[in-house]
Length: 374
Image 1 (spheres, rainbow, N blue to C red):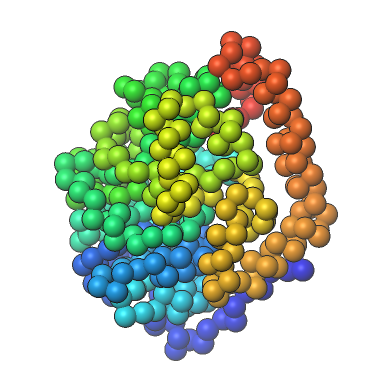
Image 2: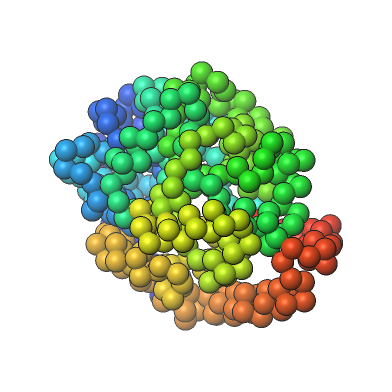
């Protein structure tokens, strides 16, 4: 069963949903809460759910402008999202990144996509904006983003949450991560590593300190383990405003993140992660698999589908789910995922417990053979 797409709009409808070449063409006030996404056409249905969650949690006395950085979203999709986000205190615009990217080839691997780099371009693409919230599209917002936007980032490039997952890996789950962050990324303290799926970016400070060309030069000098998230951590090196993990709660991926990965981290990280779950403002479905639109039994998938019920892409999301359950390719993928995360990884954890030299040796050998644990 193929996912459905909205009917193409007529030519006279395009004027309300066009891909702008500069921020001046967005026709948005950009005077209060500015929210930035970076997506391609494939991710539009999930972006729609994220936008729905924002809209349902806005404050009536604030204004919110949503800017989508893209290079290939279709006019039909832009129109659908524009209609969805239309409101007295919410606006949306679409900004073309092609000119800023030029002919650069952006390194990528695994589940990462080139769009992840677009946030590096936000300071130059939005020269008339002082600061903005950047959000990945694989999340839902459960609180008023104005509260996050109002965090003081004076003198800092950004505000972010510490990455409980990465710190848990450093503290035993994957002993190779600390050496990578310290020796290859050049971080003074690897435990200051932040998660870049939710950022409050001080765009004015970025423009003062480092250019997009310099950021992209770092991004393209090699394939970093976590791509532009590593680039930002390399540049910031721990000098950022800490915000509570409730603003970027990493869901319990494969139901092992909390019990196996974050469980290895220090007590303050574990406590903050647990407290975040009790007061989630942003639920982030970060990870290479187990996404709620394909796995409705994954952690906090019900929260995603609650907002999806009111998305204009609900039928398409339902079709994608059914296709993943019924087609040969979808079933094969589910079998593979189950084998790895219900069979191989538990066996590996028993044979090579966290924080042991044996575990470190096996992971290093796996990487030498070309395997990726990122």
